[in-house]
Amino acid sequence: MVKKAVAVLIFLAALAGNPELFSQQSTGELNAIQTVVPFLTIAPDSRAGGMGDAGVATSPDVYSMHWNPAKFAFIDGKSGVGISYSPWLRNLVPDINIAYLTGYKRLDEKQVLSAGLLYSSLGKVPLTNEFGDALRDINPNEFALDAAYSRLFTDNFSGGIAFRFIYSNLTSGYSSGGDETKPGTSFAADISGYYQKDITLFSKDAQLGFGLNFSNIGSKMSYKPHSQTSDFIPMNMRLGTAVTIDLDSYNKITATIDINKHLVPTTPIYFNIGDINERGDTIRSALTEIKAGKDPNVSVPVAILQSFYDAPGGFKEELHEITYSFGAEYWYNNQFALRGGYFHEYETKGNRKYFTAGAGFRLKGFTLDFSYLMPLRQNNALAHTLRFSLAFDFNASRNTGISRG
Image (cartoon, rainbow, N blue to C red; front, side, top):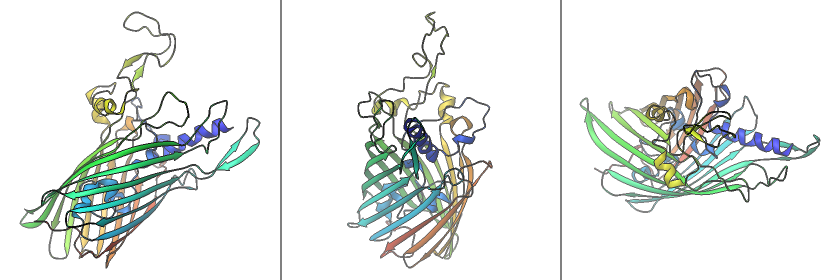
């Protein structure tokens, strides 16, 4: 039925963003962060994908729009274009994929403009009526359109701001049981900063980087025309550091760490029907009174602040909501790269744990990267997923970053 198909679509959309939900095995109580349009959090490029999904503080490249737009101010080149394609959930649905197109243009030595388009297809979904008769097939899809401005403020520090339009069409306007549906839309912004400095480490030339990005800070989204409730998009805080050491004139190695936290409310624990609350009243209906945690139906500014202290399990659960990405990258002669990484998420918050590996090839402004994901559990929707990215940097030298010292 149409209503059932709509529910399946919403489930698939969430699964695309957190593909291990269907296979979690945890001894604790599950309480993962819930948002719509989770495709916004998926790593779109293979360089970061090969380093455990870390990228907020690594050297700038054409895919900096997703990780940290401020990095564009340090990029070596006048303009560039990148394109990537990722198949997703191939062991569940054969035609779900994500494509990404991004580019940048340097205005002068201090200013860079950039833009990007992230497109997610949820494949072909058949709709039927209440009698099981086929109505038609629909192709639910989502996309985000970005534009950003980055500026160098000092020789070592830059800032960036990005604006984003988000569109999510999961139902093609079909309704069931009197519930009308519509595409969800939202407007959001990113605010980011990047610090880069040349240092000496172990008697070798090195470069230290720090990055911070508050992303998808924007309006809630609803899929019903006259609904009084709406859902949060994946507002997010990502910060990290990276250090690159020039071993000699041909070899360099980078180590990086990202930590990541959603800036949306944690689902509270409600009293069950028949429970006795603190006032001695018997609970007569579900989801009406909170036992632990905070009310999630708040405005966006309140939600951002509340996200740091609203977990029903207290400060310990807040720490469990942080994910960690560890990555390493080796370059030979700025032409050939090897990468590895690890991603960690706590068991009750999604339980994604996986290793990644990748490689890259660069020649005269053209770069080809690929990455491979190796989960710690066998029944993982992203198991053995191979991702490819292409990048074209025009008028770029063979360095990975621009010197401002």
